[in-house]
Length: 422
Image (cartoon, rainbow, N blue to C red; front, top):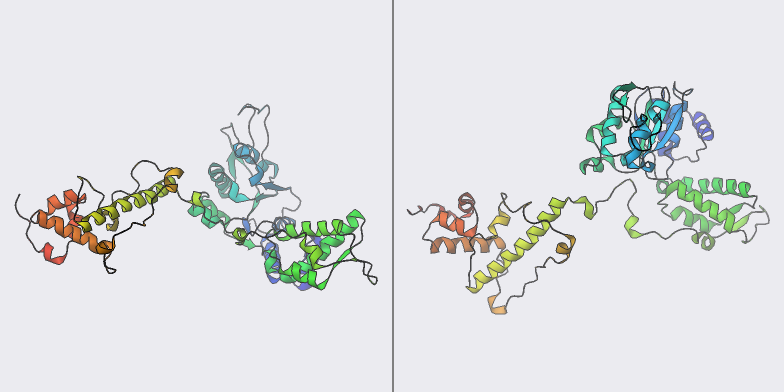
């Protein structure tokens, strides 16, 4: 597309900006429109992803068909299938009559599925079937229905990360990501920020019948330097607030507009939380990112290592007491450790009470700086082996490990010794 065609497209869909990445997204939308290829639009919340499916629909052979936009994140989980695929009368409580779903309503047209990452896994499987062969089954029915719908999806989360966490189907991700269009965040469109503000401020001044506002140089620098975590949607809200609330500022005699300086503008810019400094498209792991088994294994390791340190401390003091089945430190350096994933489920209270490894040692009994857990465990093995007159099987039983593990960890001089007869 040449510049004139591109500007005409922007005017038609009320898109403001000259950023090269934005222009590339618009051009890709026009190029893919004549096909029926599924499109996935990515980008942070508030960047204007909803404009892309409208462009695709208007430049496609389906432009005379229906265009429906569905926010998947706004549909209650229990009614997602009914909303998307419809239901039969009596299929569930409250289903007093049959209902068409969005895929039936949009037959022959385009269906925009926003926040696709919020779909439940069961619904994702049904969506995959529709994308593959156009077939679906209404809730409460056994009849296979057919539909001819162009699907455009959008997400503001990292679907690859969602796949890794088991929250999004990998096969559906591959089906959606065949053709992707990326919408850039506002902070990467520095030159467009003041342009967008002027456009929004002008629109709101006309809407509310108020004088138009104009930003001073220091206010413009503040506007451009702000990170805009809410992107274009947030900028539009700020422009509305400024246009409505800053009516008592000085008026420029030449332009007749109200002059808004940086101090006046700053009142409408929320302070940023340092924890929110990453892009919204990246879903950051939290404590919930670990499964219960992973949390349990971590805390079990902490507790067992505490016991091992106490055992080694007793060994250094010469006061050794080896229980029948100890959790020896050797287990923790053995890749075949048997304690992983076992034991009583760990609670949050257990995690908060987990001991730290700050164990005081008397000066005369301090371990040399060069000593390591591995060296101390080797010394423990040697002493137990000598006490058992070289009987590796008995030593392994006392240490609570397998004989194979003991042999693998033994110093070379002990491996050459023959194990005495019982």
